[in-house]
Image (cartoon, rainbow, N blue to C red):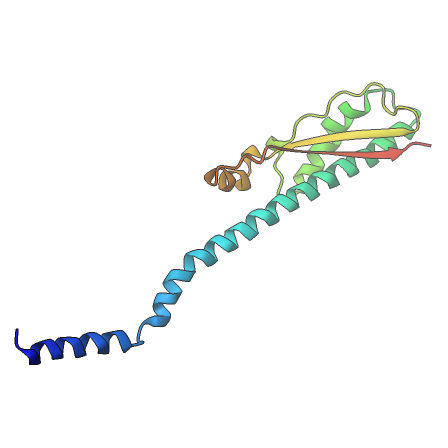
Length: 154
């Protein structure tokens, strides 16, 4: 190979290495998957926090409805059974992130209110949620959210 051909080849290689056209495109291609994963993670965490907050709100609202039943002298049934059949479906229907299939039925509580306190436990299983579908791709099992709410009965 003659010297002029080698020097021409070296000049072309050096010119190619100095050329900055397309650098922004390469940076975008490298960073785009990272940005998409970060946004998906933010959405996942937001959903998990929202679901926990809504389960707590459902427990609190059921405890408030239970307080009304406990104060009613005409009511003589199980408070939790009544809350489970009459009030829980209405609360779930107003929820944005929770579905009825995720809620476990309230346990019967014939001794409620015990003393001056009415306590309601609500359990929600995240297995049927979009967050669990995303988490299972990452090898995470979200499990259940259990929240308790208590109100004082006069």
